[in-house]
Length: 228
Ligand code: C5P
Image (cartoon, rainbow, N blue to C red; front, side, top):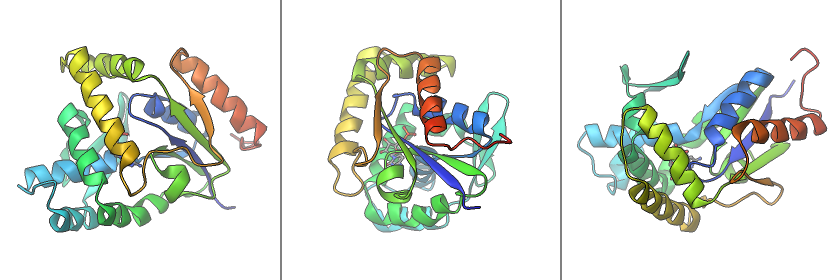
């Protein structure tokens, strides 16, 4: 049986991560956090003294990226070259690095096969920006999760506070708006909904409501396994 891929795209802070984890658990599917891949590339460049604008060296890093993901009680842990880098890559700086390296076409190309390899049975929840438009265009269910920039900044603030990082709301809002603009207007794989994506605006929805809504779409599409 071919693996089913469900795409969850959208801007940062829209709730994609939470939704994707819950879907993966409920359906017993694998999970691809593609943002984490770009974050690790940015981080790896930083610790190796490579400028994010040095496209050739950053592409080399993406091609040979020694990254792995492990499920832990408090969520997925990210390891780079044997070190746990979860907090470092999830920081505001980690997001900036990800966004910078993600604008390099050869970096995106280098990460394509790595992402597609994860589409194995019974299925994959693919969380990102271009899952539905570029990486898995044949996916039978593409969700594009939106939320206002302010709602997303507030969510990110409480997430960072839980990790012990205190960042002011105006600074986060500014960073989110700048990153949105970069992600939406870049020439390669810009952040846009796929033509056949279902756009869900989560601004006034709780995580439970978003999950229930998307699960009803999953059921409508007949993507729930009888044994799952
Ligand atoms: O989702 P997350 O906030 O971890 O993504 C970090 C950055 O990585 C995004 O701002 C975006 O620039 C980039 N990214 C991307 N394509 C993806 C996933 C993330 O360009 N599929």
